[in-house]
Image (cartoon, rainbow, N blue to C red):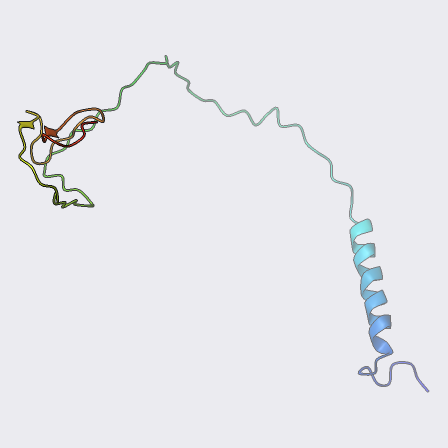
Length: 110
């Protein structure tokens, strides 16, 4: 009975695998050794400039209308009359954390 009569049999797979591995190892081992060539003759001339460090303060200049992402609409639900309103308290203004925006008699002040 010849060995390679039916190549679809299971016993042929290990033989083919071993043959491929031997062929791959032989191809790699039979390659000539690589030799590096010195690259002294491959110098490319370049132009250089000297730069001096300096500080740059970025500035943004823009025109248009700025609108907030979230608009707060609040209503006071207390009784009493406002006796003092801070002069910087206007629609759309930014107030400081410790600023007293208004005063109502009879309520606790911060």
